[in-house]
Length: 293
Image (tube, rainbow, N blue to C red; front, side):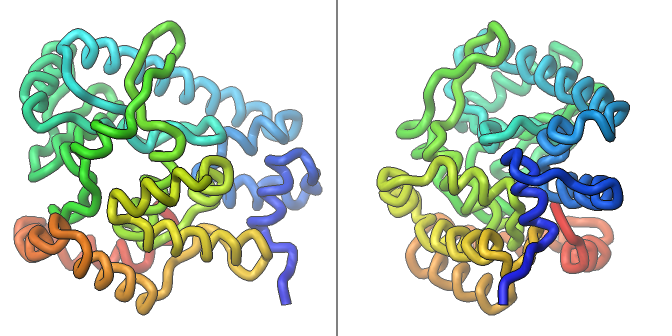
């Protein structure tokens, strides 16, 4: 039988339909943080956690200011790019800025960012990570995990980019429909875990065109899995973050293997990735026991 879960209380709080009691405010704050909805939650309970809201708003301004600067650098290079995993129905402070970049443009973009004080932290197949004063930028040529490609980055750039504004800066970003598909693929293929912000993205931005796009990008099974998981969360049968069961992940990845040529041809890179990592066992254990990402 469904119950009023902590996740549902958080959801209703964000919708303005629920006012947490004094004993619930801090508990729901942690639930919001784990689901990447901390800023949105703090804005709803402003009077209770005002000092924390002030700090989080400052972090948001810092993140968006750095994002605008990076976008200006990208625009100056003439690179073909799109902000990726960036747009969400609720404003939030991300741990990093993810950007899709055409393969031919990566070196030019890296050089331009280095000239602005960024340092290359890691250069791996399909991803370059740069950082400056705690601000992290991940440049992706193809969305991937452990050097395994799970979405076609070039196709996303071709079909699914549009112009948005960040402050007074024009930027290229994925469309809302593409972000819904990306949220599903990232949660299911890479993280094996669903957050409430993934559900909110799917609920807000999924329509007929989204399902068609998911099929085009070989991510329809991921969107189906996200849809069914979020339905359970929304009905009170599951909490978020929600770890996907192993058999569900195995089934989804197997079907991905059969259908997606890029995924199939890069799957063996997992072994190269593990062998290249220091303390690989510790990292794998940490991934297994984590409660969010």
